Structures are given as structure tokens and as C-alpha cells.
Length: 177
Image (cartoon, rainbow, N blue to C red):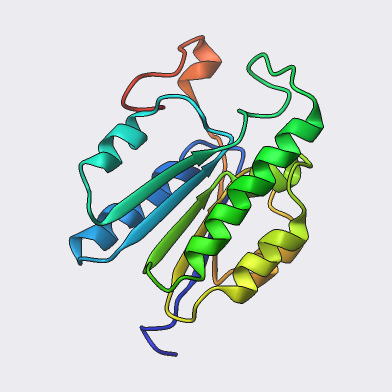
């Protein structure tokens, strides 16, 4: 198999580190002069990664989409609003992905959008099957369905062993967001 074949990489599970792992690949790819696209589903607030990625311009484009996470962190929006926003974010992602402009595309929390019922699994399958051959596609999020696991070339499940949150230590700037 050629080094030029683009991979589908899936980071899933309940443990911390899915987005961090995906962004680590972006950092590495930029080091080789590759063009990277990051599209986040549901993360609409300020994050350190959003600010940090600005410093990687012109190699990286960063898009946030959605209305926040579904039914957590005080979410009271109707599901239909989340679905509409997820679909709009997907359309931006898909259009850019098939453009041929990118070497690496990260669809952060797209798997969570599927598991929370705001994005049809079939759209993510389409994303995978329609990706340009040389493009590396990275998907992240909780509760990956078997269909996505089967289509991926590399799957890593993040499993929590120990977390500061268990001791009441909340998310930390620069580490967790």
C-alpha cells in the first residue's frame, strides 16, 4: 500500500485526548508543509486550540459550527436547531474536503454529532467514501458506530483510567480547552 494513500483515522471513546490527538497530527502535517482543515461540530466557544491554530496560518483553516453540545452544559435548544446547525457544518466540511485543496481534514466531534442524533450516520459514511484518495481524514467523538469503525484504517479508543475531574478539579486552560 502506498504512503500516498490517504487514511481514515478515528479517535473515539470516553477518555480525554481525542481532539488533542487529532490536532497533534495537524501540527505534524504542518511541519511538512501540508494544508490542513479543522472543522469542529458543537464547539462554539473560545478554545486554546482555536487561538493556537491561528498561528499556523496559512497552512490551517479552522471552522467552528453548531449550537454547542446537545443536552449538556445547560443546553436547552430544540433538537431541530442542533440538527440544522450540524447539517450546515457538514455541508461546509464536505464542500471543502472534496475541493482537493487539503492534505489533512479533521472533523472534530462529528462522531459525537452522530451519536447524539443530530447528524445522520449516512452522511459521515459519505464523507469517508467520497474523500479524495490522497487526503487523510480524521474523525473524533464519543460512541463511534460499528460502520465508522469498519471504514476507518486506524481506530483508537480513549479509555479513562484516571482523571482530575474525579477529584473535583475542573477543566484547565491550556490543557483541557
